[in-house]
Length: 121
Image (cartoon, rainbow, N blue to C red):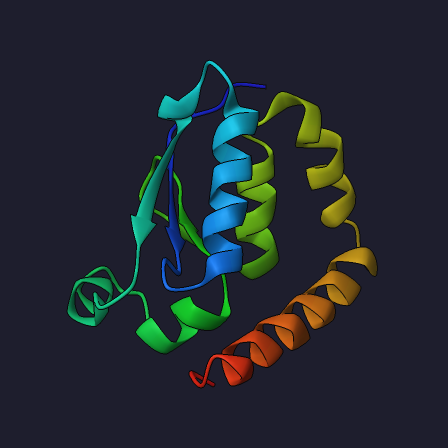
């Protein structure tokens, strides 16, 4: 499978998100150029100019592919995981009906709880 550069929009004010970014960077190994990381913190106007709703960017992972299309939530995670060869089977599983919906519900609940704990929800 050919991979192209993607841009991951992440919450740099979230310690868990920053930690996850470091994991992904290490998993990319010799291919860090495949992922550009864009901290959304304080960049509401820039996000809006790109067609991304800032409030949604806090609650759903957004990833822009090499063609400029923006993918959200589970589609975004699947695109990110496909960049790492050994996580491609996980990406495939995440896309299966049923699994996708369960993961989406769990993800949304975790994000809402995190934002509430941080006073940003």
